[in-house]
Image (cartoon, rainbow, N blue to C red; front, side, top):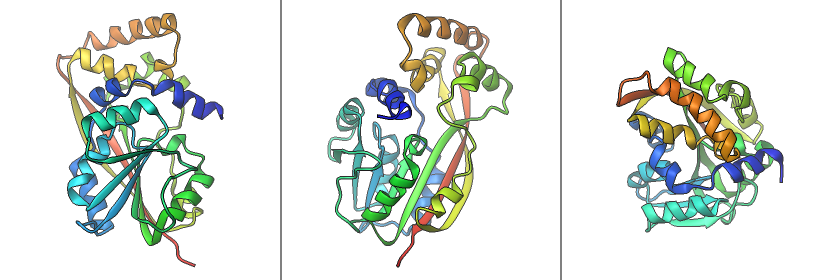
Length: 249
């Protein structure tokens, strides 16, 4: 297992906390995907790296059938508890348990940075029908806001982040092979109590993977920032969205 995927395995072993603390995605982003890929009640789609189903639950009303795939047993358990009627399968970015050309669209929410991009895109391309859609989405804290920037430093994201926020994945996607690659951005916010914001920070992969003592020290610093904020507080996000189409021979 690569170091990156080992961190993901260690950092996402509390599905219940993740599901309770992480934000949903802006309605405008969901509407963008629905319109771009012409999704309707005949559409069969895959949520890859689906986690606890936060994105899936927003997309389900717009499609005929959604299948979720995630490598984490804890995440799958939390998904099934919250959304029992959805098929949730054990699989990964490079091992998708679906037949070739069986999906109208594949979505990856808050997870593509953990993928082995070239191999994953090839596997995604395999399960998509010709011309099928690929949608990637991330909610990223808006660090242009002063207190969010302070929180980022307190939680050591500036030195320990597992991926570079704002990376343009367009070229990588186009080599997938995918065409008609587009990138758009939206804004959203999450209303959190101080306790909720603390739980949100605790879902960060490298913090969840820390030893108890290191995590305690880190969260003590985080608390000095949170204590200065209104309770509740609006945590602003920039939502980074990509859409593309599977190329045809």
